[in-house]
Length: 203
Length: 203
Image (cartoon, rainbow over all chains, first blue to last red; front, side, top):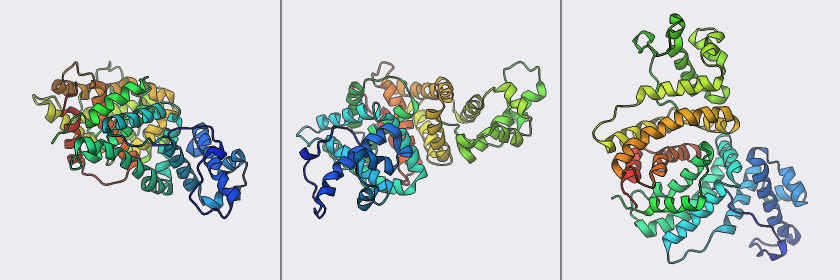
């Protein structure tokens, strides 16, 4: 759901962004800003994140951030998309293996370091319609597309339960992190979820 | 997850409680108090529920409530268990039909009148370890038992994914109510969830 991984950012090693580079030095700081936002999201959650704190951590002015992302919501969603893009693997010939790898990544993140963030974010979605709108139109839609492709390759594009299958693993992982504190092995869980989501075609 | 239904309570028609009736008049008021709590949970959510408001609505003194339920958490869980008990159907010879009926009830409640309550309650679980403990040991455990029985009758007691299957429908419904605002038909959804949860045995 949220950004999936975090790495130390070395701005020089990052690919150039595709936006016009009228402000080359500012553009270079985009990854640093988004990385700072991701760190703070994990540390304090969505509710307590302040754009000023992101600016301080990235060592940029507040105006630099607001020039590119006019709202906190836009900044947060951009940060989450960036973190997610870092861990999305290319598709292979084996859709089950792709799905399992995706679930493993999600399980390790949502049941692990992102657990706190997920709880705060879910609450924020209900209290902040603008955040919910941006989230649904970008990250949620992208995540569903990425899950739908391998699932459809196994069960078929015309499977009537495709939408339902797409949501099962994220739903299960969020349920467990919100409601239950039993320890589970994320890798084992990913395997079982994969079997359940595409193990059978019910029509 | 939460109490499932709400009916007008006629104290005289309710079965006697099993607790010793040293205070017969107070014991009679137990259903009224729990019903008042359920109404307020639906109206204002867990966070904003005050025990004093429950006392006012049930027309009892605050002490009458605290004598029986020493904390707000205990009162809320008792109210949720009562609401749930009102709608649990007896098991039949057809475990698939039982499961589908259960899912239909859950879907209609969680995607409908209980939606607001669910969001507040999920947040409260994280902020209130005592609530989480009482909830997990009573309501969550009971709900899982009730789901496990019909599921096990279809897929077998030794199914390695039994725990996972048990959580799928509640997880999916909570995910949809928390994250997504697409309209869905709860009855149709219950049918599809049932097919997915017990439609196949993957081992």
